[in-house]
Length: 201
Length: 201
Image (cartoon, rainbow over all chains, first blue to last red; front, side, top):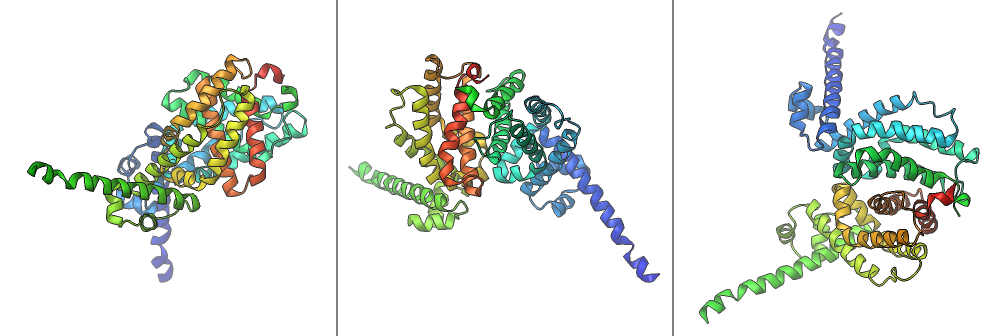
């Protein structure tokens, strides 16, 4: 009994910590998606925790941005889960996947820009492993069905998807792409990259 | 005469400073192109200057990487100057420009990765203004001649070039693209992006 009582505080503290971490990640996603320069102090305040508590979980702004990005991509991937990318013909499914991915990325593009400032691109890509597996699976199916090209390496086509959609976020943020033209530009660009080149000459 | 003598030290100091800066940029280009994690201390040592002198010119590692990238891109652009991209038909000229750009980027890809870790992509792109103007001029000519597509915005096609070639540097560094396949992959990818899509369906 004494031992059990002595242990009592641990789970309580752990539940507190989990609640704080959840609040920090939620506030971080919200604030960084509005302003990529949002400070650690602003995020702590919005999460209702002290800066010391925040730094206890995330020792630097970089670590915080890294965790927030991972959290946001996880939520985005859950949304993509609902997409029926396994049934429609691959080119149609790709247009659908681009549209939903862009809708989510556009809403969080400033969070992506915050990450771009402090993290290596390879690290940002690692956080996108789950959604990029969907992209890979779809391109693979399109190649099997003869809808997509087979003359470029599959990992390269997945990278091109990642790179093109994130470039669009940059371009839209700095004003080189108008918001209303992004979707069409993305679909045309990825179609050109994925359709068999034999048909192109 | 007295006034002139009193002024003497200034130009001497300035010449010293210029020599130090040139040595730091040269050493920075060399070391960061071999190892993207090269430290400020290593670069100071290789340049034959003290750390205090280096920090006097470049107050942070970020500032140093930024200046080294600018220096390296300036040298790269001087090499591209010699390319006859204004005479050959645009698709051929584009293949040539991709080959020379890749040759330079591949040699300095670790410097690019060092920059990618500490600078925003938009900042890295700003440093590439001069070579990207060449890309833009070539795509513009290809569009005028009817060789390249006119249904995607010109700035977007320039961004795609920048983004695709830098993605190749990342992929080659992490081993997802083999060194010997990069050139062909780049040329196929950019051709698909630039050729008129009417021919592709």
